[in-house]
Image (cartoon, rainbow, N blue to C red; front, top):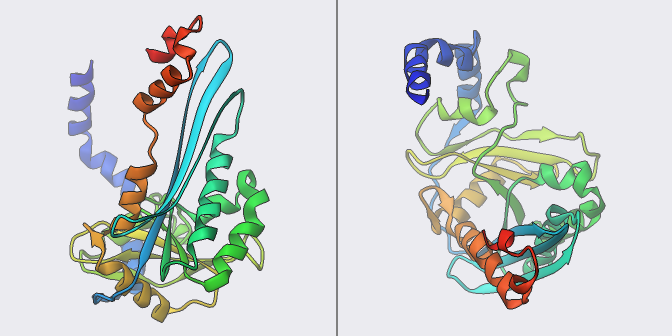
Length: 278
């Protein structure tokens, strides 16, 4: 079955890729090329911290054992903030709890470092699910104006939608060049005047993946982008900030670790716990 699928994919490769690129591919690429600014960052001595969160859960007999963590960690490995919470319940909004913990960690970090890197997208913080946290996000980011959101992947299709783009914006910038640089700022005001998001796609060094940076407010310019790139450059590996990689590794809650919690809490002796431990 799978062999047939693979063969069909190979046979129809050109047709499939032509659909992905769309009829206006070259026109979009030209626009992306016009938006791209060549810039090679230089190492700047600053202290950065990465913030990320994680959550996991397992269910048995209608009850859910859950755990969430959030960590703020410097690029040298020093942990600045370590937050964690767990419990038993049902229908717990773990995503919201984790987001709140991320913001709390950020609030505790802004005065300790030069630059705070939040994993993910500012858009997700301003969507309906997280709307109750908006005021805290805005207040924290405005305190020293040293917080940015960074995403390794992006599905946004805003910059070239008028040209009929089919793929995400990042797809077209990846086809423009392999050189370091950034795209011109793209400003979105759909969340309100106090929640304007300015974003740019950035490549820190030759042939590394593009990442997306998001700032709060529309007052930012190319000088701000270059400054952030300089600050990120020294402690980035493979084009990605090492502090964020450390944050991800330090906060991740694996199924194995959750199984340990089950055992430590004595839940492994409860009827039905075989399902928990797999």
